[in-house]
Length: 281
Ligand SMILES: [Zn+2]
Image (cartoon, rainbow, N blue to C red; front, top):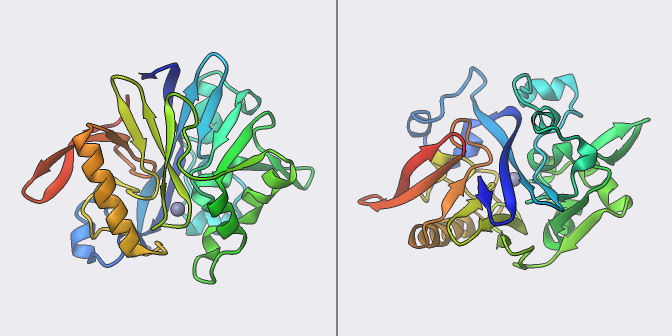
């Protein structure tokens, strides 16, 4: 897929599982399990689906998945499965190595978005992409350094503090345009300072909806994750983005849906719903 000066590639970095109840908040299981079946531990399957944007001068990775620094116990808890796909294997399929990446845009610092950002080398944490500048919202970094007692388990400092220490983490503020094709849309319901990526040229707009709509099943407004810090803010943000996406024919790109990479929207009796789902570009 070509967007302006970028060749856009889907980078699958593996699967993991989270509690279905937590993923759907107040929605009862008989409803959510119709679309997302649970395993014997009540976990639903999630993808870690990243993007790579390649131009003549840049190779930009968007989010880094779960990474491979997990203990066996946590691999089990989070059902981490990187047998078919991993970040480095998916890059290798494009003949790329970590040192080729020039920029890493982090939508927010939760562990399933930043796990692949650092590696352990000689017992020390280092940036996994040694030639890259990393970007995150200042607001999100600030929160991640001092989260609440409720959400601190979602932030693993070894995934991002080493970036700051190495001087490669740029903290950006607000909805600035990154370049001609890339804009950020800031949302604050899931956590503070999550930046969604809007990728557009004159013929196409994709929006990387991250944890605002983690899967295709999260399109209906009450389907809000139990993890969200401000669920009512999420509802308003979903409403606003869905309307704009419908009006301006944006395609939604899903980071966590196990089957669908992106989808188009339509409006019907039950409000805005998905029209057509696509597995790949
Ligand atoms: Zn998140």
